[in-house]
Image (tube, rainbow, N blue to C red; front, top):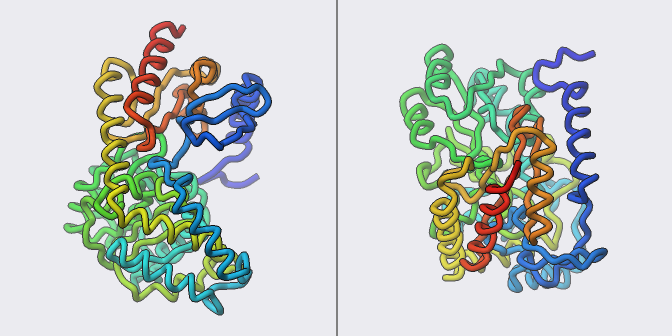
Length: 403
């Protein structure tokens, strides 16, 4: 039996599996689809049921953009290899080096790509904790309570290097108290949280300016959705990154490709990170991923990015205007969460919406606190206003009659 300081599988796994079984019994898992009609018209190949997908993190619909798909095919044909299958700090494709340059140019800071954002967190956070990214003694590491599982997963490893604390969500008073008590503090959080809501960026920056706080921020759910080049929510405040700031993000969500990136305030740690921990293993970006990322960069440099961003913002505004009288979290975000209480109620709500042609994700403990189960839904920039109106009508009708 472990000490269970930062995780407890004996408690979490049975609770999670019971919820998943419930969702499966209602036919809300393992739905197999034909995606030729896109996310707005998926078809269950076994029943023929067609539905609009409101559980996709492709917030701009770029995962099916012809330029992105074709760029992946072109890269495979050009390189004629799926990947080198070795540590990239030893040998890497010139195409991968070119990709780093293009990503850095797009976002205006040094950018380190990886196969996933989770791999970046696993590589970076232990080194941040031990002081190797700041040339200092270890830092006290504070995780926001709602920080994504991919970061929380590393807590036990980080705790072997330093003191680890968990702060109440967006609690700047708690964080300031820690900064006053300890000389070196790092804060681990998200920009747009995966269950809805936004980080208090102004509060975080203020503490950074006053106390030298190191900020490690995962902006996976906002990358591409905001900013003239798709820089994301975090960069709306942290415009110029310095050696006390790192922003990581998934390129498998709104960006429309696959993998993850780290935006660095300094290029001094670039090579060091490339050969450290999971980044040094034999799983660099595959050739197709290099291609689709290049294809997405081209879209990001075109007027189409702004068109899709504006449609997403319009859908969010429409949703919030028409749903303001309902208990829905995620104000200001394209991710919304409808809390209904118990697991069975969340599954019933998701099932009824699916019957009406809209798939949403039922969410339970340990993803959300006990007794706060509900559905998560994602608005997208490739949804027309009419599609958004139709979904809102269905959601209001279901909630009004929900027992």
